[in-house]
Length: 485
Image (cartoon, rainbow, N blue to C red; front, side):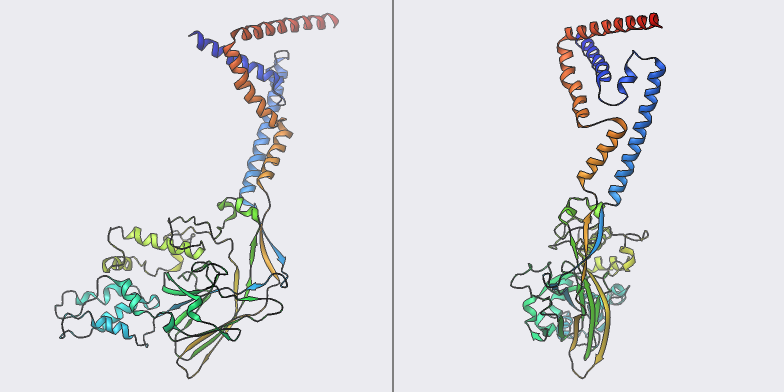
């Protein structure tokens, strides 16, 4: 009990001592009993107004710092020192109903239970829609299969192993490509186009950070400068495909259709002209919170849907993983969502190839994917395209960078962390007289001197006596003032 009383008395003396000696403006006048109570109320009101203004200014500055820290400016590019890099290219085989798929027919023949079972073209159409994303339509999972469920002498749709069937039936790299040329110089297509799994099936990517390391032996140097200004990429295909122009961290996806080009009909030629404007980031951009800069660097794999199998972050990777997480959440059973039951469930909810709008963050009625763009995402603009027909069986596309960019974007910091410290410190110093030493002073009184007063009770008495003497001196001083007046 005595110890508790000593602690309380020591705390009271510390509060009184701190208020009388604090370096904060106005505090000493409020708690100094030498002044009249009206003066103390005046200084209390002034101090309160100053602190209110200081807090409001600090809150306004912090809101501005969170919302307006990053600035994107335009700067000139010297093509003599900064070469222009051709964007990545993705090629995905697409389904074409007029095309013959011998391995698909062989697969369907393998589903016969005996020689008396006839070849089922509905099963073939079902497998085409399972394997090729562009042929799928809502309701295809059940409409081609339900009528044969109770038939004993009919060929039925397979219930699983769709991934293995797709790997068997889809064309490999050598079957897909006929020829590849960069500025009229041929190169080995399959040496540089590497496979990757996407939402539209197996695709082959050229110069993608998702498949190869930059400047490795499988990275094709597609650079242009003032001495080598041409940038023509010619790709000739044996099968129907979709060609994608992408950033090197992107992958083909159903949401990114603006730069997707179909080469389906045999004898189809197309020339595509585009421009490129790159973006660079100041090193300090990484120090800013993700929600403030509103972008992620390729090595920051912070996905709301969880872990990913892809090597780098991009908006398309985030949306791919988000769609996969949505599909697994809707079909919340332990079995694979890729069997017939799972595919039928996803088909019922229209989640195999959902409308692109339902994955956008502003569409509240769907399954929004909260994905940030990539901080290294370049701006690719389509300038024009021309299509031709010929008498050949191949399909071809020529990608041409029209004009070398003379400008680029730069993402930079407007306000750094040190600016926050300086601004808040200036506001507190202007309105309250606070400083770093004020913080040290507060902790000194509340730790060192508090422990000293608690342990050495005599000091408290000494301070109390000094305070009593001080009060007597004040009383005597007032009497002297009264006599003079």
